[in-house]
Length: 87
Image 1 (tube, one colour):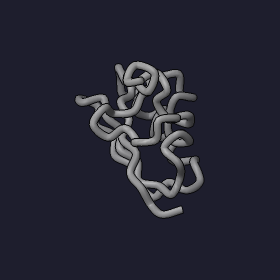
Image 2: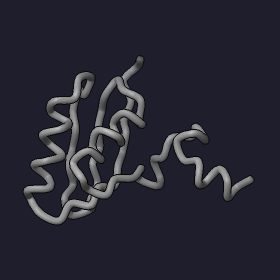
Image 3: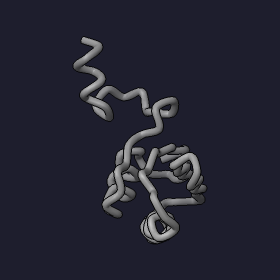
Image 4: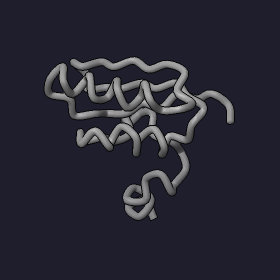
């Protein structure tokens, strides 16, 4: 799979939260790089993994995790709630 960027909104309230996100991304096979913007609650991950895998992994930290709205993948199965609203 080609390298792609996944952008997530992650509810991080302290540096410990940032550390937890760094830990799971650091262990995830296939992640090339990542950037955590604590102030914007934004996590940008460059990897050769499907966005769903990155989202699931980050959500294992227990933090509220969602796709960053402007960067959400186009596949309807990634956001079924939105597909239902649009139908």
